[in-house]
Image 1 (tube, rainbow, N blue to C red):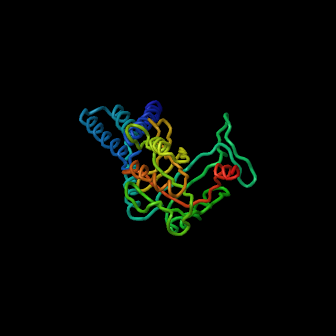
Image 2: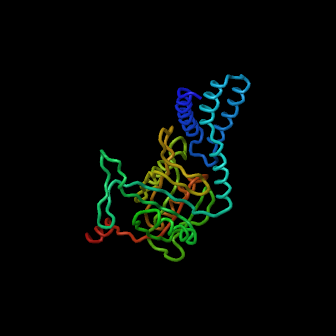
Image 3: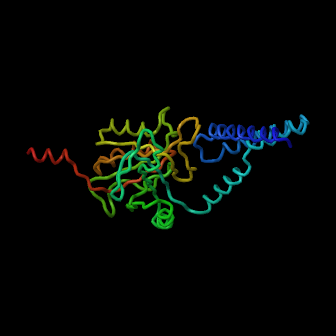
Length: 290
């Protein structure tokens, strides 16, 4: 094979890989099942069959078949995705995890903040994981080895709902029940309610219901339930990032507005609840004026 033909195979093969990346991103769209990988491989197999029927010459077949279609198809990725799906169904894992990227913060006495002209490799990041104590305990040593001097905290939460299945109610009863509660709703930018992202619908409906406040944080990578990890990718068509909506209010008002959360997470989403200590500054000022 000549140098020119070899160079053409490498360059065209790179173009095929880019085409595969774009096609996979357009078809996958945040779905759990690797539909993008399946679509790429099926279409690639059809193209290979057509090229075989055309009986191309050696060089043309090398460029069209090996370079373009060979780099476009991802049979090894399909095997990996199949193995991943099998393992996830055979072995238990955490209920969910979301990575949130910060812009400013301190850790171990050192300030870390984002800059406009910078790679921003040293900005603070927070990972929130939800799971049973045994599951979290198994992964803590791995996190300690993976991250550089991480600050780890453990909190007791109640999983209220997971992908449309109700598990508990945020009624404030049981150990730790108190006057203030924090609801956290883990979902995705791609999950919609009447044409808009579900986290926007949650905030809008809770505001109309008169709750004290709700804040949505947009993550960079994460998963919940049996759904595949998702987040921002290069050259991605649309954003498929995870989101976390945090709601804080009294136990009674949280319980009264939980029907809104229950309705908007009827199919997708992870909902947790925990009792917290809250400094109600407005209430303290009102008492001081009396």
